[in-house]
Image 1 (cartoon, one colour):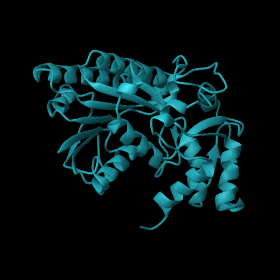
Image 2: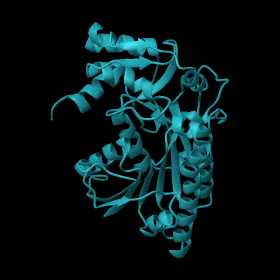
Image 3: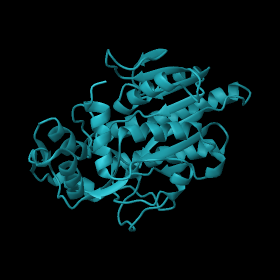
Amino acid sequence: MTRILILGGGGMIGQKLAHHLAADGWQGQPAEVILHDVGFAPDGAVAAQRMTGSLTEPGAVERLAALRPDVIFHLAAIVSGEAEQDFDKGWDVNMFPTWHLLSALRAEHVNSGETYLPRLVFSSSIAVFGAPFPDKIGDDFLAAPLTSYGAQKACCELMIGDFSRKGFINGVSIRLPTICVRPGKPNKAASGFFSGIIREPLNGLDAVLPVPDTVRHLHASPRSAVGFLMRAGTMELDPLGARRSLNMPGVSCTIAEQIEALRAVAGADAVAHIRSDPDENITKIVAGWPRDFDTARARELGFVAESDFAEIIRTYIADEMTPA
């Protein structure tokens, strides 16, 4: 039975991935799923084990590596806004544990007589890119982040590429668009308002827009994010060659286009819940983010996302607001 470890398994995407594995298994077969995070909701996804703790704790990653999972989904991180506000915490959580994890996996590889070679799927971010941008960013565009979060993700990508090149792991980094519409309560991500201006109005609540509606950004739904992870975990990696980082597909649109999609799906009453309240700090962060991508390479490799923002909204309604 395939043993799958999900780091950050208590988070939104980790839980959705775990639910998917519980329902559909791994390549048509049941899987042993181990979830690790700082905490879990009591009614969360079914798993063989739920391990509570922080990757920053001494010995934590070594204990996880000793389980010798066949597949590791590394989703654990603090979000962009928090990483920018708390410099030390951002590096301590988002970068250093990945180095220690890779070192521990290398040790397991060596101790196994080089027979243990886990698949590691790292959830990176389009924040690895910084301005100035071309009209569309391809996989060969320079990663030069303008935020601490982006720098931390870029460092992890490079480490995973090098450990894979040396044959210690079989890793791939997928650069996720902003995941929208996120269910639940707002988090500290600087990008949180992209979900808030859709989620809150759909639920009859007011929402604040802290940036101009001319801002353009790339989005994909949580359902697509799970699809990206599953594809990255099962695909052949040889076609990637030495370039083990991939830009994921998504919908590039302005906030004005998001709002018009909301109007088309839910009506003018929903749009009336959105209130503009400029925030200089968030506007500055968002100004350094990429806007559109050429994702032909990922699409050729079987990664699929929504075709327009209205589809993203309908996906949220179907997955989060429609009674089971």
